[in-house]
Length: 322
Image (cartoon, rainbow, N blue to C red; front, top):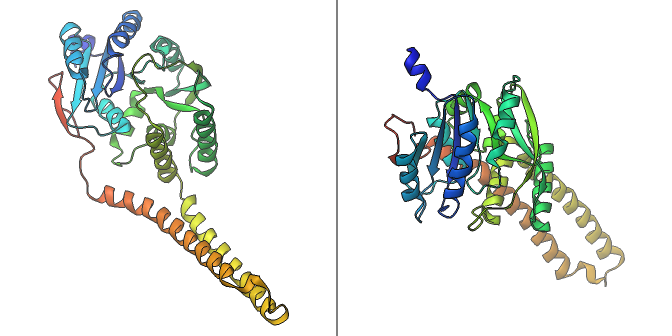
C-alpha cells in the first residue's frame, strides 16, 4: 500500500442500517457529519438501505453526491435489521467500526467516547442502556426479562441491556465477516469472539421522528433467535417437560385407581380428569415439537447455502460480498 493510498483509506467506519427513515436522514447526516469532522482521522459513513419503500434511497443518493465520505448500499429487498448490519460490516475499510441505528436513539455524539476506550486497547466497546426514555412499562419489562433469561441460558456471556450500538475493532469485524450463519444475532456474535470488551453506559434517547420499525413481533422474533442461536437449553427443556408429564401421568394413574377402588362415586374419575390429562400431554408434545422445529428450521436455512443478502445498488465502485 502506497503512502497516498494509506492517507485516503478511512480510519473510522460508521455503519447505519436504514429502513423507511426519510424523516430522520437529514438530521442523522447533520449530526453524524459534525462528529466525523471532529475525528482525528479519515472516516466513512456506510448507510445500508434495507429495501425502503419511501424516499430513503433518493436521500442517500443526494448525500453520496454531496459528501464523498457517504457510501450507500441498496439491498434488493428487505432482509431485516441484522442482515443490513452484516452487509455494512462486509463493506467497511476502517480500523474502528461503529454501528448504530438511524432513528437517533443511539446518539452519534457519543462516538468519540467509544473511540477513547478503543484507543485504550479495548476491541469491543458496547453501549449499555441505563435508562429507556419514555418507553412503556410492558416493553421495559419484556426487555428486562429477556436479557436476564438470555444471560442464564446462553453459552456465552451476553451483556444485559445492550443493543447493536457499539464500536468494534477491525480484527473483530473480520472474524464476524467470516461467520457464515444466516440467523444472525450480532450482539451475541460479538460477545462470542471474545477479546477485550467493555461497557459504555448511556441513556437512550427517544426516536427522533417517524414510526417505530422494531415492532413487538420483530423484537420477539429477535429474542427467539438470540435464545436458539446461543443456547441448547430449550432442547433440554422439552426433555424435562416429557419426564415431568410422564411422572405426572403415573401419579394420576395411581390416583384414579385409588378413587376407583375406594371412592367409586367420585366425580374425579370421570371425563373431566381424562380430558385434562389429554390436553396437558398434548400441550407438552406441541411445545416440544415447536422447540425442535426452531432448531431444525435453522439447520434447513443453513444447509441451503444461499447468500445472506442481494445488493441492487452501491454508492461506491468496489466489489462487495453477499
